[in-house]
Image 1: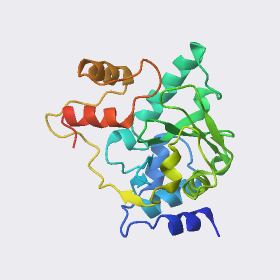
Image 2: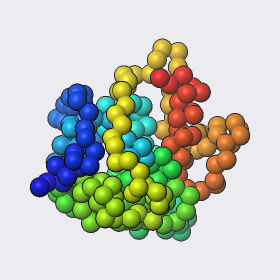
Image 3: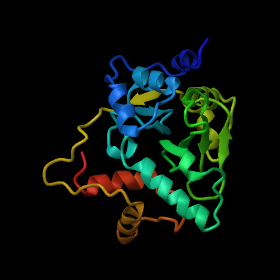
Length: 224
């Protein structure tokens, strides 16, 4: 049984996920994607696993969870700054590609090594407000199966996740273009940090911007 078969047994997919033009997506990104991810995205569409793990999708509900959106570039730049400042980043930031986020603000990465063999990329997870990293020596789909089945415990994830219902909750995709008159979303996360602090959000000085604050920014600036 393949990993995608195991995942669909754990988390039944929605009936009508949106189609994806993978040729256009890969041309936009400039590299090939793992076959397991393309199957995963085609079967499930955009949404969240166990109400916690959001895998980026080419038809993401906002550009902040869109595989071709600004987050992978912004995160790579942030990791380069972290590494230069002596904070723990166990991999070359140029080999990390952000492709998911949790509701707690952790990010999921492909370790793109070797770059020309995407089906052998492994998974890394950072810590939202701390220095810990976790590495899974397998594909994204195998990672989801292992975590949601309780076989693998990611230290950064809540203890109750394995006891939570292993459901997939789809999200309705929106057009990628901003609504007329809306404020463009920034690619620099420092802009969001400054806005969050100015509006009374409890945001740590280091670590990743929590997904809830991204959502608050979008709502405050005319996102749909």
